[in-house]
Length: 471
Ligand SMILES: Nc1nc2c(ncn2[C@@H]2O[C@H](COP(=O)(O)OP(=O)(O)OP(=O)(O)O)[C@@H](O)[C@H]2O)c(=O)[nH]1
Ligand SMILES: [Mg+2]
Image (cartoon, rainbow, N blue to C red):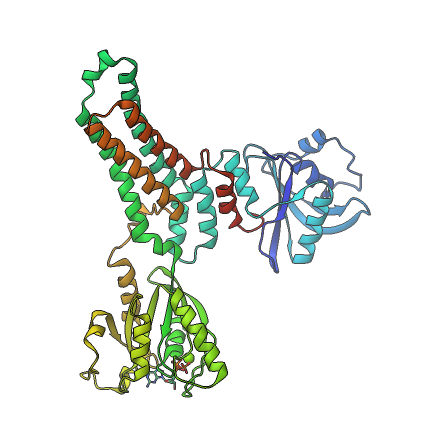
């Protein structure tokens, strides 16, 4: 692996109490030392050797001092510096963190000096990539780091933490171990066919495969299907004709005046999005333009955008004004969205008698319905419960069992399962053990790919590209 020293600002851009510059690699300590003057030390120039600079800093001790530009002795900032020497660091390389004042210009000036002294600017995720390549974490744990940073709900965060602590890895390793055991038994048969063959019971092999590999794999695949949504979230849109109360509902859910509400039809033009947490599901909620017949060119542009947006949504809240008869537009909207997941939301229930039910076409009765008043914030909690119900169908995630594979894992788990099922069939049909071993070895290779063993560079590249710089 490339072992040059890398550096980046590890804290977010913008102003804050402190900001951290992180340096990792063989020369991290001497590079940091060359721009740092410990408190209490006179203006001596840092003409030390690599080794003496290295020894100057004890691992995991904080040093107070100043960042000095070695070219002109100009003081840049008052900082704390900590060195974490290999292998006891995030990357397993020598790592130095400079804790400076948080402000883009100051941090950038320090980073500039560090780069001038020989470090290279880190790419997104490069610190975590080094932690992975140096064997400190496996690929599932590296993926969990990005999930943890991006988590928008407590549940998503908890899942990321479980994975970061190796939850998924342990599960995958135990399945691999089960297959290695079966393979070992089978190899013994291949090596000493006469002596051992009789002693291996086909039923035992199959029982072991099912109990320790097939069932756990199926559980993990199901966990993905059931709870992946809590990790990834969904896109929900409010759709309907003008003035039915889409923006009012958006404001209700966001608990702030996110969108303009007026009694004039065609108020909303652009799609307005808001991040929400509904029952633990991360939701991007989109308020859309009313789907009306209009000649207004601006409204028409909004309507075009709305059609595109609805197409990309996981759930559509089809809003109807309870106080008015259905119109041709309502029917047309239903026809457009009926192939998607839809909840029929009868808004403005405050304007009608509780007993009143607008007649609707039979086919509409198949979709879930709810009555609300966005203006008076009535029925909103029930609507949130219904959204959760539509996606989780009453399944409550067991917080101690937050192992939720992502799409990449799921696909490998499915292929692995298929290979093991083939092996199971092979055993049942008393096929030659060599052939069964091919399937089991393939399954092991697929599981290894989840952990990042022998995985292609472009896959690793794709994963780390999702990171931010400095992580
Ligand atoms: N009585 C009553 N009025 C409501 C309710 N929800 C919205 N309204 C009113 O209906 C009007 C239109 O509301 P909006 O939220 O702007 O409707 P919209 O669907 O976003 O409209 P467009 O953006 O024009 O498509 C406003 O005067 C709201 O105050 C409700 O539950 N009850
Ligand atoms: Mg609106």
